Amino acid sequence: MRIKKMSSIGILISEQISEATKIKSEKMGLENAKNNSPYFCKTICDLPVLNHPNLEKPAIVIVGGPSLHRKNPVAKIIASGFRGDIVTTDGSLGYCLRNGLVPDYVVSLDPHPKRIVRWFGDTELETRPEDDYFERQDLDKEHWKNQEECNQQLIKLINEHGKRIKAILSTSVDASVTKRCIESRMEIYWWNPLYDDPQEQDSISKSLFESNRIPCMVTGGNVGTAAWILAHSVLKNNHVAVVGMDLGYAPGTPLLNTQYYYELLELLGNRVAEVFIEVYNPHINETWFTDPTYYWYRKVFLDLAGEANCVTYNCTEGGTLFGEPIHFTHLSNFLSKFSKHGG
Amino acid sequence: MKDLLKGNYKVPPAKETDESKESAVSSEETLEEKFEAAALKKLGGSITFVKKKKTPFVWGGNEDKKNE
Image (cartoon, rainbow over the protein chains, first blue to last red):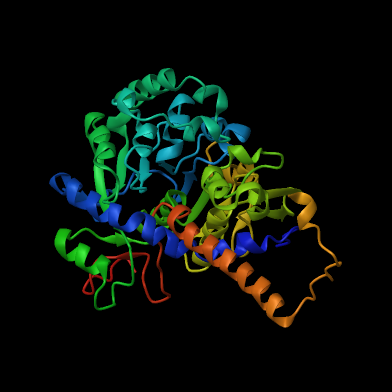
């Protein structure tokens, strides 16, 4: 990897993100696990094997990065007649449904009390405080410009198709997410995020497992990586492609449109630009940039990919996630290998 | 009043001592430490991530190794 302009403060902060995440999310995740406990029934160990007629067991994991609306991978997936598991994250579920693809699974993880339910259509949107999180980022701007309208569309789509989707919910999600999955008749399969080393004496994960008997799964810190882990470790897919897994921002993206912009601005004031890290991606001959949190996710994913019992293909066609052992390739190449009609 | 307070010699520029250099460095470090501390509260990911080499991707108690 060539980092064109090394941001020392960015790298420094990225080294602290693991600890930052613990402070930010652990308490909330454990509280949410208590609130969700009345709904615990099935776990990821109860997931039935889907009957896709492809012996090579391919899967596509659709993540909600900016490349989704830039590359529209769902159109190619549908056209190819792909036969394998389709796993989406919460953030890409609406995109899939709007474009005619009902996924087999949707994974949700983040414990945020107000934002994550938006991906499922928030029936209490009018009571929420103003939040430009969705509109501001480089997502589908046309779609997000009218927040109320797109929320109503999502509620309708998810209520219509929910019964065909298996919700793979971390016990850490806010109860509002659970409620929407139940309302839309999704089948829920639970898992605990692995908060720490379960072999340690005072392990939170061990204690959580003993209280709810729900298996713990490694997360990689974000829902996209967790969805990829589900695909190979639980669903036992041998060939797993990821799309929309940018872990960064396209060249020219205004800093305002990056996910952590407000937090970084608060920290660094007019030096905010210095924290971003430019990454030259030789596969597409473009220099993307990323922030400390996504840089950490990237490093974690690359470490985990080396331990995974599958071949991983990054078919995002953009972003910062490349390097051994990941096959960075066009989605059409993956589809031509594993689809009815090829790519 | 201003007329009475005029200086009657030119003050030489302050020399950069080792102490002042150290002070500059330590204030930079303090700034970095402040950034780090503040970052810890603001910039976390979605959920904690831990995985040691011996830990399987899915852990279901010590007796359950089927997902390893």
